[in-house]
Length: 286
Length: 168
Image (cartoon, rainbow over all chains, first blue to last red; front, side, top):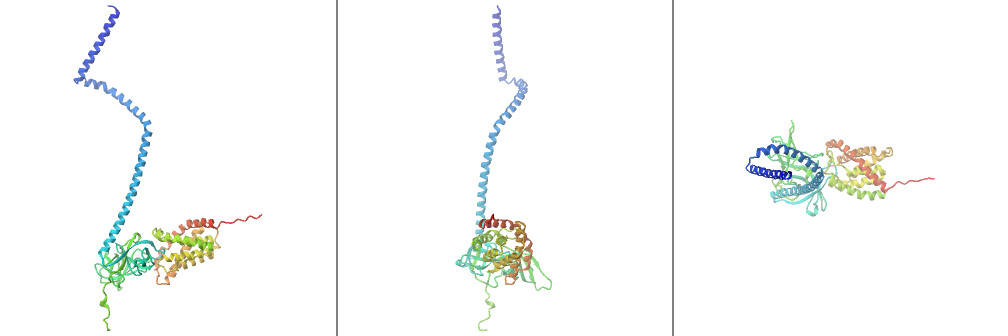
């Protein structure tokens, strides 16, 4: 046997060995007998693989970052625009809801006293003077509005028409210094006169009988006496009671029911049935 | 003088609409800024008492049309205010900031005081508790006077450019 033959023989034996080993490993792995061996071999290698992979990922992210960031920014801008649009829509819906509520309140108020004839008016301006509290409405003589007519809102009494033009009118508010309204306390039924002040804000109810037990929070309404205002329209609530010794009457500070700074819609009461005071008239012939 | 009147009418119409529809709702320290008062005072300072008087009459009448005050009250108060301030105007130094502020606050005080006096003579007399609003009233109007003054100063320069004579 020469050397070539020997080498050829060794080579074939090696091939056979390796094929046999492969088959053995194949059979062993298929039967689950190499798991521990695999763990022993794989773990350290996997650690190296993991480290290498993370380095590669970091390297890849550096180049992929700007593209993703740009996309994220674009998406953010689009979402922000959508949010802005939805917020605007939300505001509009809130405005509509507010108007609806206002009209609903006015409608309910109108329904409570169907005998009164009313004209709905928008508040279009306010007094230019610091000494007076009045508003300007967009209904005037052409709409049946006349000087002296009471004006109310869904929350309560607003004031009285003070001046009219053909298509607008000026309304003196309850809180004005010149305003004076006959009123009644709802619980004690005591009557008095409620008037405003120059600085506005709170009102004072005077000429309340000393016998009346006026409570804080008691509602003040129009009494209807005098015929200028319909009865039972809410004016406000008592916030303070002033009782002085040796005084003939007591007085109360009244918080108006209406928020005059936020007034948008009002009713002008064109006609109403004043309370019957004919019992005070002298009989004919005297 | 005619130009003052032609300018006063449209400008005061715009201002009274702003005053009635907008400014009365936006209170500063509880005070609604009286833009027309400031405009009259500023114009008086810029163009002299006579021009200021014209503006005072127009502004006053328009103010009273949209107020519960008797017609003529604001006009009277503004006329007396501009006349009183006009007496000292010639003695004031030329200063485009401090003088308008002082003019504005003093003019606002005079206007308020004269209006109160006039109303006290009528059935529409406000009570004396109104004195409480005086400090806020003066502060608000003194603060707002410089921008109003400068706007009208620009307008005045645009309409009446200064003529320079160069002598050889």
